[in-house]
Amino acid sequence: MTPLMLYDTYTRSLREFIPLHGSDVGIYTCGPTVYDYAHIGNLRTYLFEDLLVRALKMNGYRVRRVMNITDVGHLTSDSDTGEDKMEKGALRTGRSAWDIASFYTEAFRGDMRRLNILEPDVWTRATEHIPEQIDMIRCIEEKGFTYRTSDGIYFDTSRLPDYGYLARLDVEGLQAGTRVDVGEKRFPTDFALWKFSPPGQKRQMEWDSPWGVGFPGWHIECSAMSEKYLGPFFDIHCGGEDHIPVHHTNEIAQTEACYGTRLANFWMHGYFLQLGDAKMSKSSGEFLRVQTLIDQGYDPLAYRFFCLSAHYRAKLNFTWEGMDGAVTALSRLRSAAYELGEPGEVDPGFVDRFTGQVNDDLNLPRAVALVWELLRSDLPAPTRKATLLYFDQILGLDLAGWKPEEVSVPAEILALVDERQKARKEKRFADADAIRAQVTAAGFEIEDTPQGPRVKPKK
RNA sequence: GGCGACGUGGCCAAGUGGGAAGGCAAGGGUCUGCAAAACCCUGAUCACGGGUUCAAAUCCCGUCGUCGCCUCCA
Image 1 (cartoon, rainbow, N blue to C red):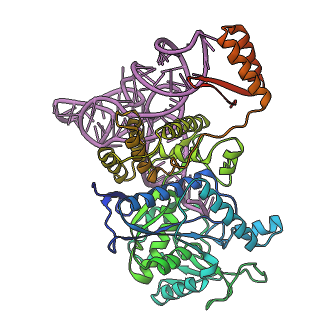
Image 2 (image 1 turned 180 degrees about the vertical axis):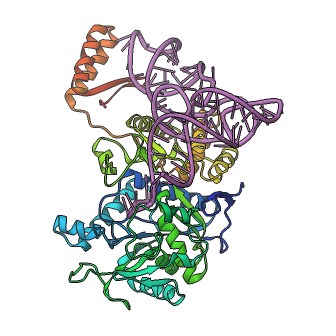
Image 3 (image 1 turned 90 degrees about the vertical axis):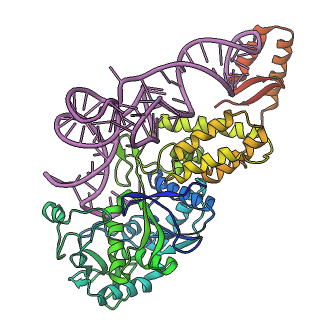
């Protein structure tokens, strides 16, 4: 079998993946901040991670996937000025910050299911790991990497000689070209580990700590929770490309300070979904959710298929034309799979080639091309079916479970169809066409097959 | 302003030194009384201009364009 090669952002290179511990793989995937719905751009990254998990499993590894839920509102900026999104959401809706978090957490899990993303093995909520985060901050403090300002405890990035290596940050350049108000921070790249509750203000979410009442900084939860569930150095850490320069850079800094490791052996990042040449954003432009697609009549798995057509490490431009193309392609794939009948044995040649593409840093576009080649091949139907189902372990399109929709057609329509058949048999084609026009006008379409006419609702 | 990425047929998108994958759309065809569905066939001087090389979509330089990060973000 071809070795599994994965692109590691840390080394900026393709490396052969070898687990740290036998055939067990630990993977931590940065999850959502649950102050709003996820949009389909967010979901693209979780789709990439799902493909990764499935590929690891196909390679025979036991995978433990941990995903965090950021349910505590960090500030909208690292300086002291921003608003807290959770608390703001609470004010806006009249619900508690806790209600908002649990509401959007459930919505998120629903979206994951609808895209057939495998459930993570461990969900970790930031608010359920406050002691762990405090412990880690204390550890960082003991090693001398912190300082205190009037609003919190900060990480002193100047103490780490290779701070920013993951992102190849030009630290000098950042200092010179900084556009943010540094406030009391000593250096632009320094970041909060613990924030104090504003004086005279009671937050819904706040906790006691050795430094005073407040709440954890944004980055510490991932370092603390990944250590708890996967240890201080584990196999793979994933997230969106936007996490490279700040969030993941800071996670590494914290873990290096406390444990001396770079947290994960592989750092992998999913690239953005673009919408009309702009990234999809929670704060501007169109906000497309899975539910939006459903409301417009799209099967969520068509979006999954759409994402398979691009490599995870390249931006993907979302267009409705592209989405419609995915719908058509998926629908043909499903019908073809269904008509192949019962599976037999897989074809080893196709399986090898498929594995080769998947193991080449998850080249799903190439892997999907093999699907079409397989369907067109001369192999017996049971072989093609079995091989296709094998592919679907990665593709996740639920090809085994799909059946043509059972449609109910009103009796009067069926009567018209019969009448048309009769007319056709008697070669009264003008009559037949007139009846078909009636049926079409009623919203149904007729397909004549060797087994007789088939009626279904018009799309 | 600083840093970075990208620009492949109408759309989406692989390919990163030596045959321009695949899907959708379009056109043509087979089948059909006609359609529909299905199947088959057809198409790209790889943004532009230089350079390196026996050979460049692929490497180097420049130009133009688009996007991202530097502020919460997948």
